[in-house]
Length: 301
Image (cartoon, rainbow, N blue to C red; front, side, top):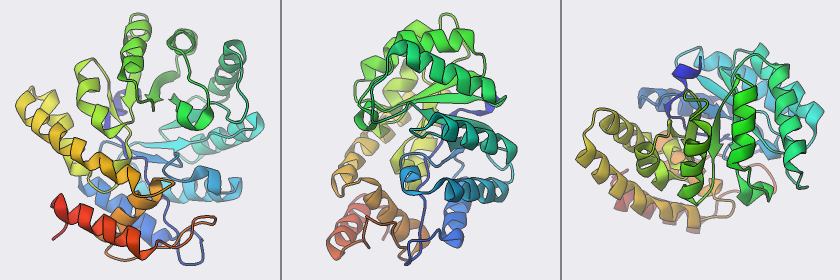
């Protein structure tokens, strides 16, 4: 299955109605649109998907219904991270039972753990499922960066740990992972997460990108990936220059996914959606800023 996991895999936002409940029609419309844009897969319940704002029951319901809705059209990854190990195992085995093609597991946040503890954590999770496991390294939100040595050890000893999503601003960490891990696991998949890292990461051997802007402008990333794979480097460079200009959207809101959602509302859904408390309904200033952003980048007219 891991050969199918490549390219552009948007970590899709979870869309809510005006009461803060999951808006199934909106989520399904986004999935259909992204698949029509030829993305290579979908990540459900990642950080951009606000997994931390949902109960475990809601996470399971969303995973089950949305995986069924995708219905094999593209591979589906499901984020199953939590602070409690038993919850991770419960969510991971549930993801496998509903047909997920793999799981994404963030290291436990709040406390920092030793490398030996983190090794045991991921090792035991990998033994609980038979589907692929992707490690999620996001020190900005966990407070702890997973070392190349730790990931190498896990990759060598646990064959269903097949990749890592490296959400770190230092592209040198991606390079270090590639050098350290792939010499013994040439099939190991490394996905960049920062949107403007896609091209340089591909150039040093990454498998693709799991990035937020692909929620509302997936075609740019799909085209860049395809141009690079066909050795049309100049076309890939031009798209990279365009993507770099898009990074400002991450400064429009805190948390950043609020602006990503508003871009989805305006470009994809053509209507407003709600929010999950403590995020309130999007204010007019953010709506106007996002509209200007989309207009200036020729994503809407």
